[in-house]
Length: 151
Image (cartoon, rainbow, N blue to C red):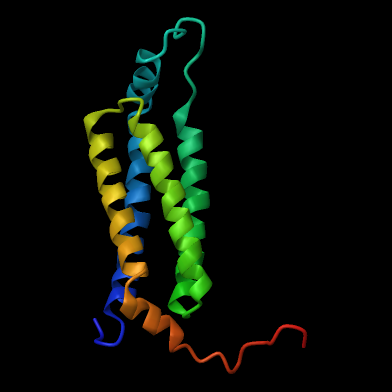
């Protein structure tokens, strides 16, 4: 890592790791679909009258939307756009809330491990994004070629 931007580089690599972990979680959801449906049903008093939802389509759409959003935001961040840091942070917080909601149903142990790793990565990424040297890295951006508003 360069001495100029270690936290910014760490944020990029950690976000890439989060994207891989999202893919692993999606594959686990496909493989463990029945176990996840059983976990959802076990905590509901109205389980006999309600058909369990299929979790696979939700996870696949989430992977596509969140994964592509993070990928695009990461490119803006690497181009030193400060607003991308805020957008990545908001996306990760929403992802963490979704992960916590999934943990609430008591999924299989392997899914819990991946979820906890994801939450830890969220915290690490947000920490790296908001370090002082990352702020300095973003401020050093040359914006002389940007189009000005109103022109």
